[in-house]
Image 1 (cartoon, helix red, strand yellow):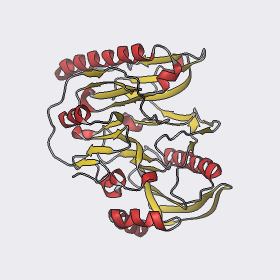
Image 2: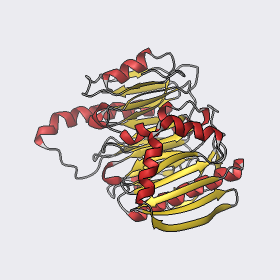
Image 3: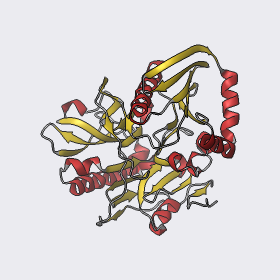
Length: 383
């Protein structure tokens, strides 16, 4: 279906024929950048960054500790074989590394596909190094996603490279008048594109019903339109989408209650920072394993915590409200605090946030190696 603001949605079944590797040369015009990055990894690993702060949950086999990094701008997981990492060295130069996990065993039946993927990943690494040329500012501008079976899309400014994209996605990129700003690759050839003009196209192939139910991809409310999106290439119905006003909408398994709580604390800090910058107030509900805590986030911090109390029936009601996409979004534009978005971490963890003002929210805070870093104002060029 085609939305009136130019967004396009497709839900089809069956994988299309993938495309081969392609690359697009850089041009003078630039593309709006996001300093929010999230990457799903295998075994509940993940990388998240917002502004100057980040958190990296990764394999013990990572060679991160042996690399000369001062800061990590982005990470892309090559499933269980290793990672791509882009960041800044202690000398202030940009660096891109391509790691391989020691001891990775390849099944005899997968040798050919492994060799093909390894060659494609090597090509990606060469392209990233040639495009960024050890320039820290250029490395920071990279937007990268790795999907199933070695497929990938990476962009630096208006230059991009891709490999084995679903045919309908490759055709959309080739034919659309706007350039791709963010691409998300998910299971069974599902995908999302956020274009440089702010419109969106997607084909979820019925694999991400919770995301479809939120209606966030097709919203007409300007400040709630997505500017970043990620789909899990490992598990169905796990995703993360960030709206222009800074609100996160995600569903993902984090592996433990402790990790869920850490992410909850990170997002609390993120909301407090935004509230201080723009005078917003958020009403939030955090649910894990059927237990709920409610609180209010304002420029003064987190207050009025209530709970925990059982909330399985509340979750069922919230799901019903979320499925009424048009009514939900209309309420969000009229009533203070009425716009609700769900935030899920794990199959039984949820965080819902309502904002008293649907204007642009432009700052973020996360843990960087376990410690809170200084805030950085987030530039949202799409506001």
